[in-house]
Length: 278
Image (cartoon, rainbow, N blue to C red; front, top):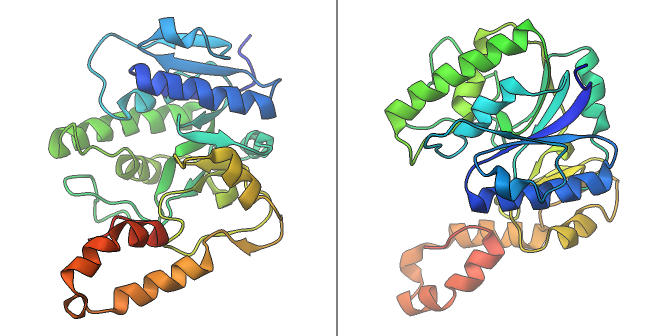
């Protein structure tokens, strides 16, 4: 009998596998009764983790998130929530399974709504009103529509890889095109189910209710969880002082600031703005 619900990770290489073990360990603190599976090229490492199943991927050279795109269509569950290895589940995620009783796929849009890259698929027939789904969390059910989706995604991903190269390939542009060109019923879910940390200090980010999952690699995920979930009222997660300071700094003409001052203040500016300084 096929298990009804479960979480799926995909990781290749020692560093990624160890990160997956940490992520899944945290997941099972929140969801001890929901199984998880890991697709990996290092089952020897993975068996020390909390996974109910460890499935070995074919022996080949895997690049970036390629193993994820291969694995999602091979889930052992009827309803699956795929999670990246740099995720931290800190709240109830079961509603993602519940929505799959009505929808084929559920996900959160990328922070800036669209993710496009040089030498990646961006056909004219896909309107910009169709947002890019962040590939770090993807909920889906097993049926013919999602089987066709994942087959198309794999084909488009490989075409993008050939065009962009192994060092620059992204999986989200091809996922967007695959979702547009297949018959899956897609549900956009709130960002609290996949809250990105990348540059959240420098772009306005808000939350409504509890943040269920943090996606990123900040220094202290537990501290960020406590900070972000101090309240469940509608709130800004972006530190407003830092955001306002960033806007001020961007308005100061660089030619008016001595070079030695720019060099001396670089670490502070990076910290306050949440992005590399120049």
